[in-house]
Amino acid sequence: MTPVAPLLLPTHIMSRTLVAFALLTFVSAVPAAAQNSYAPPGDTLRFHETQKTGVVMNMPQGEVQASVDLDATVAIKRFAGDTAQAWFESLALAASTPQGEQKPPTDAVLRKPFRLGFDSRGRVKLVEAPALPEALAGFGDLSNEFGDLLLRLPAKPLKVGLTWTDTVSRADSANDRKMSATQITDYRVDKDTVVNGTPALLVRFTQKASINADQPVPGQPGMRSEAKLEGNATGFYVFAPKPGRMLARRRTGKFAGDVNIAAAGMTMKQALDFTNTVDAVK
Image (cartoon, rainbow, N blue to C red):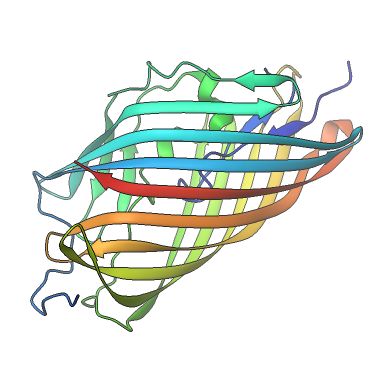
């Protein structure tokens, strides 16, 4: 049986750091004394996120296009000792491929707790994720939903003109999948702003990222696929220092690279672009 090449359908491009495969046949100035940290333990942060991803793959039979949409509301509650718990309050996923539309059920994910490390500067690390349905694997690594959702604050107090660089590397191995990613982000505090009466700062960023993913080809025992992608993203965060809250994030980017199935002697070019929005909600 001729293997079917995998199509990379990430719903979170480096904003979750790691990606997964799907098959085409599968179916106003801020006060000087304002704090430079996130709100103290006990606070719950809620965000509404959307992402649209377009994918183009050059396969032996020609160019194939697909798209993936995500719409979610997530919550993170901080506890003492730099710990936190997070969950999905709502989640809708949809993929469009030449084989048709897919909208998997997500009820099994809702309100299931994710245990996190979460320090005052917004550096979040996954400690434990709930078991997630295999049917959702092709829509991205949801276990890393919260890994870089937030602005990672610098050691110095935020002020207009401040610049800094942050590097994040991650490697995960689960369910016979191996994923690794590195992102280097350059930040600049661009200007003061006000959101619904709350003084805040607009922080612009540019990002370079690389992603490696290795996993079995579904339905083809003994075969594995390997993807290597590189790309760039740009966007901005809105952060309110006094209450210690991120109010919004916008990010767009493009990635490109190869998907290789060595056992089948197949290598395919792939490109994707995405637009991501995050807004704080009550």
